[in-house]
Amino acid sequence: MEGGNIYFQECYRYLCAYSDYEESDFVIFGVPYDGTATYKPGARFGPDEVRRASWVLETYSPNLRRDLTQVKIADLDNVIIEGDQREILERIYRAALGIMRDGKKVVVIGGDHSITYPLVKAAKEAYGDLVLVHFDAHCDLREEYLGNRYSHASVIRRCYEVTGDIYQFGIRSGEREEWEFAWSNTHIFTKLPGEKEIQEIRSLGKPVYITIDIDVLDPAYAPGTGTPEPCGYSTKELIDTLYLFRDLRDKIVGFDIVEVSPPCDINSVTSITAAKIIRELILTLGR
Image (cartoon, rainbow, N blue to C red; front, side, top):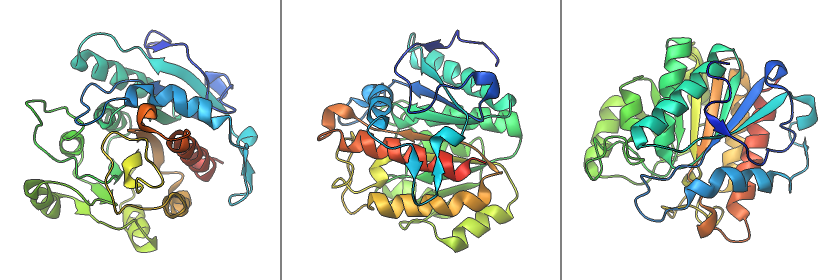
């Protein structure tokens, strides 16, 4: 892996993620950064709390009839959060690029949504062409927010500069300009994807990266997030949708889950939910 462990600091490990890097198919790392939070901060605590919450889960998924013990998973700890935002984003990019160049699927736990841009940039560098699949309550398509072009409110706009193939699902909030940009430049839906949308993405024949903002879920199911948005989806609806991506498992190069904010949570519900989403996606995408 490019850069070795110079990007990471030791932390708690995700459930069953104790394989050696060289033998692993999935490689997890956390990004405890929420420097662009626009309402309530706290997502910096997301990576460690989601890992801790994962140990509440069983390793077995009855829906998929697969077990995490069947999958080789490494957890490289958390990216070191030192320096300004530009330095942190570059560190994320370099860490992800090394993993992707080694042909492993990357799994990243945020952190606010700004961390997705360097991950998408790394995927484009490693694999060439790319489709971005985005689950969120918000468009995240502002050109800038409070003078920051790399805000979590602008992350998908920055990703659009990397790839024009963007599918946005569950979106229900954004400024008029964001919606107008999306209607002209991305594939945006207030609903979750069905078989039709999955087959459309599959027909492109390109590598796929998935980013999941936990606030795509209704606050009743995921209260622990910094910018909750009513009228969202249930955890079951989202996970059932993610199962549809099994037909794309060979094309999906990685995914992230972001905006889990433990200080805003109730009884660790959101952290446990994020941990289960990770489990189900790994088992959906693994061989």
